[in-house]
Amino acid sequence: MFDKLTKSDIRKMEEEIEHRKLVVRPQALEDLKAARAQGDLSENFEYYAAKKFKNQNESRIRYLEKMIRTAEIIDDSSADDEVGMNNTVTVEFSDDGSVEVFKIVTTIRANSIGGMITGESPLGKALLGKKVGDIAHVELENGAGYDVKILKLENTDGDDDAIRSF
Image (tube, rainbow, N blue to C red):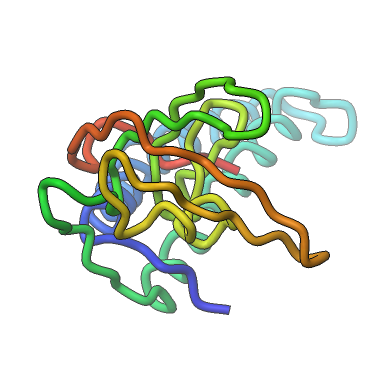
């Protein structure tokens, strides 16, 4: 499966890779060397902790490089008056009148608890391309659905949110 990422997402991932290679990796190697110099490795907790940290860093680098290599680059531009990627949308749910705020993001930055939903989610799909005042029907898997009214739209860029770390 290819993740859909914006150019901004790719740039942030490249920056993280560079930081991990130029800053974190040398420090992890230095910590490992210092722990190894303490002697008996069979009971050396610092050695195992340093080795684990070094391996986690290398794993994260490989993960990010693979994400970049296999990503499908999507355009995050949209008209000023319609919902697009990296837009913050205030919606009112028709069934109970509750109001919520969501930001439409790519899968790498999704955080539903934090109000960041993907354009691939049922709500995200329903909102994309709509304008303030429009009613969007959200289709669910079981054939049911619900309606939301778009109350407010804020255009933002994709540079304010960090890439989620695993």
